[in-house]
Amino acid sequence: MYPYATVRSVVGRADEARADCDRLERAVPALVGAACRASADASTWRALDAALAADTTSPAGIRTWALTIAGEMAARRGDAVGADARFREALALDPNDAYLAGAYADFLIDAGRHDEAARLLDNRTRHDALLLRLVIAERQLPERRERYEADRAELAARFDATRRRGDSVHRREEARYALEVEDDPARALTLARANFAMQKEPADARLLADAARAAGARP
Image (spheres, rainbow, N blue to C red):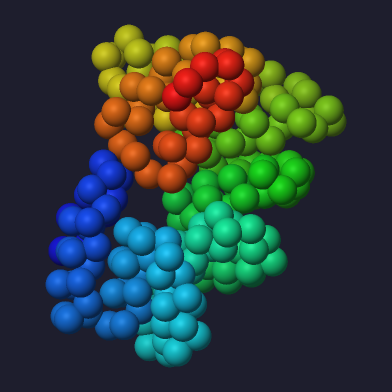
């Protein structure tokens, strides 16, 4: 049931995602149900925090997932201390979780902690989304100029290969690359609009708004 909730959240069908989580809550531990609901409805973050505080039996993978969601919720409501603590606890449980690394890197970049973001991502460049975040962080670090140029060229080549295959799965990443690395807001907006037509998570909405603002246009 949770995978259905995830898909429905991604495409913007929040009411259906919440209904999926309601049904799931009757059959799973409290932490799983609370994390499912928080991913579909950010206003329920207090219930997720309470479930995390009460939880003593969940496997590391479940707790990592729930902590990552809690970290993202805290970051969105401006609780930087809480977000940082949740992300760090999650990383201690699973330092190899790629989604978690991306979420924490976004938080660090937003906070201007580019050196920390770069160090977090240094050995994770196999993932296109993580290489993108590394390039964004390195762009702000003069001491990494040579590494930045090499990583940027590698990422551009990957996007080019993706386009040649006719693959549109990385539209969010390519839009962010156009906006934050290439300084091409018009192209970023075109890509962000195409991406938002397919998926509507908070990161997609933010990217669309940022690209539109930079381009001086409506989303």
